[in-house]
Image (tube, rainbow, N blue to C red; front, side, top):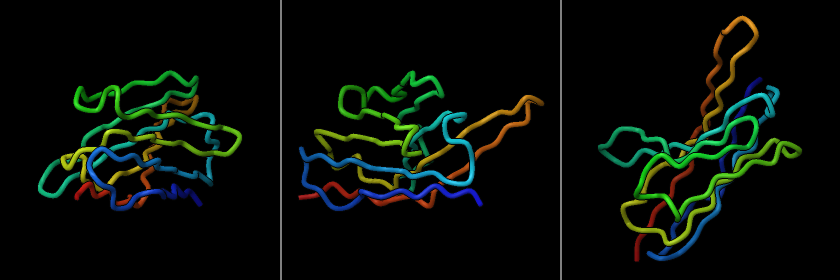
Length: 121
């Protein structure tokens, strides 16, 4: 059974930091690209950052570059999102996502349940 379990969200003041974790189970974690997405109320889900199977990282939104860092620990089947200098506009539900492809080119996509991050004074 595939599971992606996010944790680490909560209420933080502007300028603060949080580290989100996502523990994966039920699939071969090291074979998957891992990403963090977020969805704010009334907005579409957006990609925050990704890390490939080889550990290459991308941050896809200029508003988050330099503030958010994704990393992975394949030994722990865990992907992290370190968030610093948080702003109220970072308030959203943050989701963990796994993407894989097998030798037949079939793709696999898994989502976690999400963890709420609220940035407010």
